Length: 152
Image 1 (tube, rainbow, N blue to C red):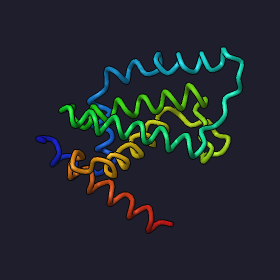
Image 2 (image 1 turned 90 degrees about the horizontal axis):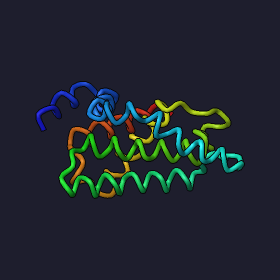
Image 3 (image 1 turned 135 degrees about the vertical axis):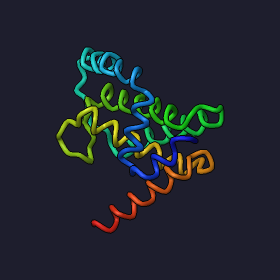
Image 4 (image 1 turned 90 degrees about the vertical axis):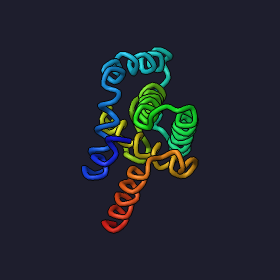
């Protein structure tokens, strides 16, 4: 809880960066871990299909459920989100070659996939276990959603 005041002041983007910082060592291994599922998908000879809206909804639900369960077990919020997001990105890379139907035919970078995964997982956790999401994170996400809605 000590660092939540700093996260509140620095914005949602900085909050996400802090979540990543908490997982620096595991994320350093991500290229190795992400390569495995992608290699298996390619080795099977099957062409990878972009993740459909249904796929994204499933992965979001899985990640959010993980965060809710991890938080109930006492895992710190940044760690729970980071692990869930890394798993989400593994699925998108391994099963879909980093392609998401809503992004067109452009392969997304791991950075883009990770940022999108974190945001979706956090909004899902806010929906399913709001009491386990830190208040400052909820506030920043709500502000980002309102800002995005105003831009459209």
